[in-house]
Image 1: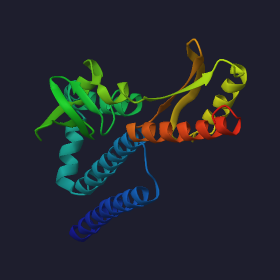
Image 2: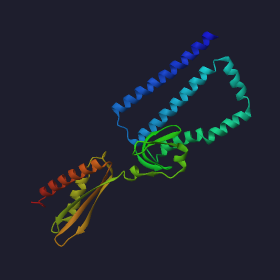
Image 3: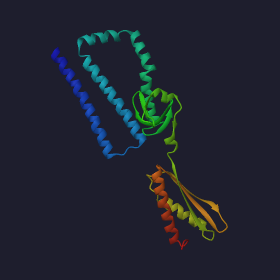
Image 4: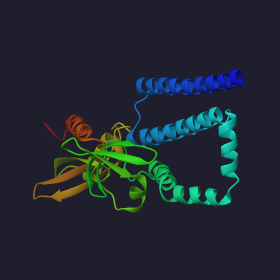
Length: 251
């Protein structure tokens, strides 16, 4: 029996070790080949931790239940319905509720990794979303450990999501003698050449102002980051000016 116990314990240990190694390798491969967005990375990490926790729990229990003494004690405990009800009740109120809330947060995503948030008296950047707690790093380096159940019940202020769209605005003045319909068509064509992976929504082109001698045409779009917004605005201005020069509007 001792030899059988050692063999089963060794198998359980190998399975757990292989699982951890596989997770590390998968993380490295994903980090090198893919640039995951915050929302995708959040879901991935929560699911990964959930799977690891389940595998570890099953492996440890399987190894422990090989021991006859522990198996007998576990059987007698599980036979007691009162104890089972007590355990389930406590889990539902604490650990289980936090675990379920963590899964909901990962998919509903009121906050994501790297977001700047304020919730349950904690203000800072979301550093980690665990199975039961979420870690928020304050500006001074302190860490807040917020139970996931709090995230599911409290109001969350997310400054990052609120500012996810960075507006790109380009204004062009053209003489009133020009064909405004044609000018708008040109701006629509140039705005349509903006990279789809850098804009959040389709550009809007319209006449924003009319002066005695000229009209002001405006192109509005939304980029994902401030840097992309600046680059897109500069690129669009150059393209529009070159196009209007080709049309003979600018000398």
